[in-house]
Image 1: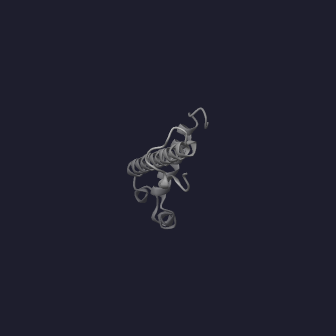
Image 2 (image 1 turned 90 degrees about the vertical axis):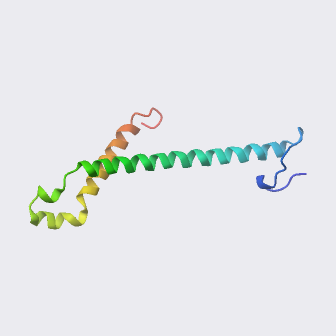
Length: 103
């Protein structure tokens, strides 16, 4: 009776058509899991960006605290961005170790 993917599924299923019910349930589960993963990833990106921006704003301009000779060789490594990323990684590690299943 019913052939194909969940997009081709009829709107209503008879009580005895288990294949139709399965496709409707599978379609719902897949869409819910996609939404859940996308939401979790967007939240993670937002948190990491916020923490990185906060730390790069807190860090002073390293050009004023080190000699110009050292600054010339350090500048290509972008120390302000690197320090923010390292601090974010340490914070993420700290919080992930508190999760019972992961840590």
